[in-house]
View 1 (spheres, one colour):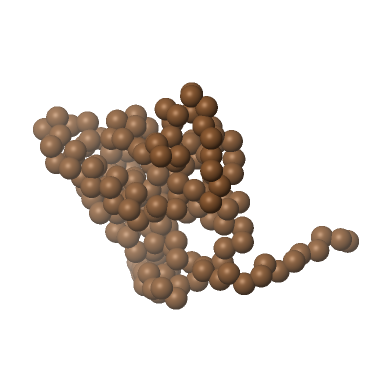
View 2: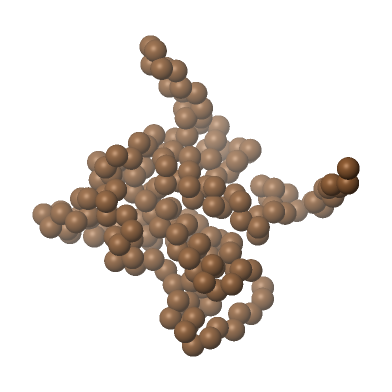
Length: 177
């Protein structure tokens, strides 16, 4: 792992060499419109507990997100990392506490394998939740926030040589016409 030297201005954005973690205030600043219950004073105590749990769980489950944009400049690294973590926190809350979300369709954590409109026929993709799944990030596709985080994680340049744990040589491609 490479050592990063930070300017004095960047030190406020980084904690232990990584982008500073999301705080409840950071999250509210961007996502309160989708989760208005977090602004309700009558439910403040429950909302605080759920938000703290969500932040803690997401940082535990997705430790590697902090490193995905490390090779970019410090501003891009911080902004993309914090955006991805905020989306993951929204994904977590929308899946586990759908009653707290407004206008967010969620499948409760299960990605949909097939849907049919009339008469309604929905099949959940349970295979996406197994260790042998072709896409280990598929559970993120259970709501719009997770889908955005999924896209960010899948398209980062740090994943270019990663193929679900395969560390074999990358296939050389030729673009000569």
